Image (cartoon, rainbow, N blue to C red; front, side, top):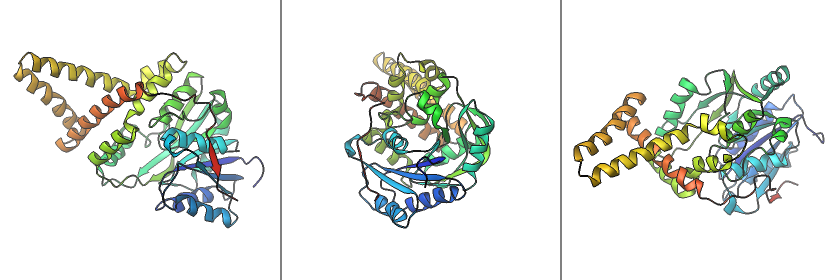
Amino acid sequence: MSASPLVSIGIKALNEEGHIAAAVTSALASLSDIDGEVVLADSGSHDRTAAIALEFAARGAPVRVWQLSNPAERCCGIGAQLAYQQAQGEFFYLLDGDMVLDPAFISAGLAFLRDNPDYAAVGGRVIEAQTQSIEFELRARSDLEKGSALAGDVDRLDCGGLYRCAAIRSVGYFADRNLHAFEEFELGARLRAQGWKLARIDQLAVHHYGHAVGGYRLMLKRLRSGYAGGPGEVVRAGLRRRHQSQIVRNFSQLRNGIAVWAWWICLLASMLCGQWGLFAGLLAVPIAFLSWRRGGLRLGLYSLATWNVNAIGLIQGMVRARTAPTQPIAAKALHP
């Protein structure tokens, strides 16, 4: 491996011993004909995630493993930023520890970025391999309707993309270390505010093996872990900054959250006034609308619950303390 590889593939992980070998293997396969490296950013796993990745390094593979020094800081944003902080390549791809990267995507992404110098990053199609959970069933459907299955310009690269590091340097940092969710959207907002573009191409990028836990249990877990506060953290991060207008225009979680707040106020007012017919109607309308949009009562109820959690998260995230996103992340090297 040269001192300055062409491509760095960063993998952020926490307790992914069941998937990490496949993730690292796929990353190395993608670099078989490319000068590159793999950087694992471990957020303090309690299982063998880091040890499995170190086995690749012990066999001479270009793999380096960094672990967050303070596990209390762990969140989605800090894992992504730690991987980028330790990367040395001209281009950077972010992969989750429960993903498998298609071996042809990196080459296709490099070709696109070389032919389109005004684009900061490019992504491809994402296949949700775990759709038993209602959460990922809805995500897979969304991908087909308006997500990764559609090629063209986008405002974010959910589930990873290949980034031009020069573009990242122009906006200061890769991921906001404070964010528990939606770090890809926040990065896209900063890049687009600086005039950069983002795109998806008609090329398979990753298979995503998400949580097998039930959707409502996952929702409660997100409330307890702080993940649900991601929307509010994104909004707060953009206050009085250049990308604030991007958030106002494109962040659907903000619009949905405001709509839910208004719904709560109307429900409360109808209760206080004893207007129980109105109260029942206010409850029924969003359930009926979302059930129609999602194609069934089961998915409609889950979507309504998700919108309410999102509205709570907007409040949670807006009041959280922040660390300067440009502050280096304390981590220790585990590789030789």
